Image 1: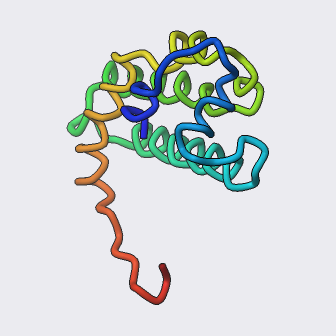
Image 2 (image 1 turned 60 degrees about the horizontal axis):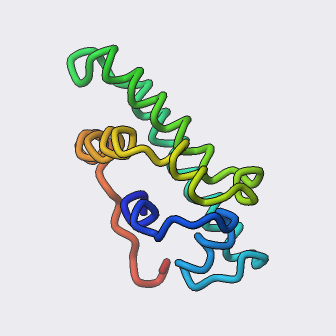
Length: 123
């Protein structure tokens, strides 16, 4: 999703409006709020996984960079940020280095906490 958001055309329109539009959602809908909450929740979980890593799995510097990147990107999804211009939000909170840091770590996280299979009845 982070890569997708980086590719959303940058405008001076409010972040929430542009992100919702790119996802074909109404920015005032509960679905859009759920997307923001879910993104923040997943990023929080990622930060907790990173903090729980042993030094053999990840260096202290890598761990700090990852936690910093997650906390920065989480700000993009905060309700207060949704009224700021998208150009400003992307410049401040969706920097390429931080997105790459999270993408790198997603490979490590999958080894530590593999994705669970969801049965058809639970979908």
